Image (cartoon, rainbow, N blue to C red):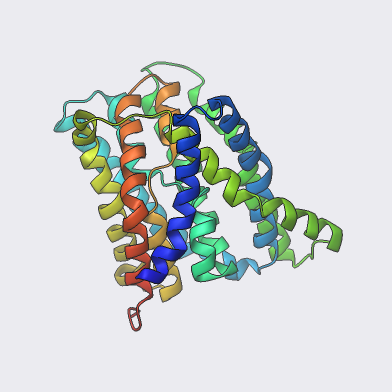
Length: 312
C-alpha cells in the first residue's frame, strides 16, 4: 500500500501545486488555461499517438473491454441523472450535468501518469478506450440533454468539435499506424517522445489551477455526495462486474477498467455544465470532492487490484 501511495501522491502533488499557485495568486488563472491548452492540443496527443502506434491494434484495442467499460459508464450516467431528477427534484439539464459529473473521469490527464507506471505501455490501449467512452460519448449525450429544449444545432456542433478533437485524432492515427504496423521514423519518434513527456506535468498542473478556482462548502459537499459515490464507488464496481464476471476478460483488462473508473471527475464535466448554464455549481463540487478523495482512494484501489492472486 505504501508503494502505491509513494507512486500516486507525487502525481496528485503536482495537482496541488497548480491549485496552490492559483489560490495564492502566484500565477494568473489564464496561465494555467494556456498550460492546459498546450497539454490538450500538443503534449497529450503526441504521447498517445506514439504509444498507440507502437502496439498492434489487437493488443491495444479489445472490443469487449470497450463495450463493458462503456456500459458501466452509461449506467452510472443515466442512474445518477435519474436520481438527481427524481429524488433531488433537479431539472433535466441539471440532472444531466450531475450525471456527467459521475460518469466523466479524468482519464486523459490522470490516466497515463497513474496507469502506465503500474501496467506498462500496454495500458495506453485501455486509457484510449476510456477516453473514447467518457469524452466522445458522454460529452455528446450530456450536451444534448443539458441544452434547452428545442435548441437547434447542438448535436451538430458537438459532433464537429469531436471530429477535430486532437486527443481523439491522435488515438485514431496511432491505432491506424499500429494496425498497419507502420513504424514512426526515428526523428519523428524522438520528437513525439520529447513532446509527450511533458503531457503529465503540464496537464496535472493545469488541472490543479482549474481546481483552484472552484470552491466547496458543506452544503455543496452534501449535494455532491451522491454523484461522488457514483463516481468513486459504483462506477469501479460496475466496471469490475461487467469486465470480469460478465465478460470474463483477462485480468489486465479488468484491472485497467476498474482503475480508470476510479479516477476523479474531469474538469470537462464542469466546463460542459458551465457552457449550458445548468448544474455548474453542483458539478464543480463533484470535481473538487472526487479529486480530494481519489488522492487516497485511488492508491488503495490500485493496491487491492495488484495484490498477489486477485485475478480470476
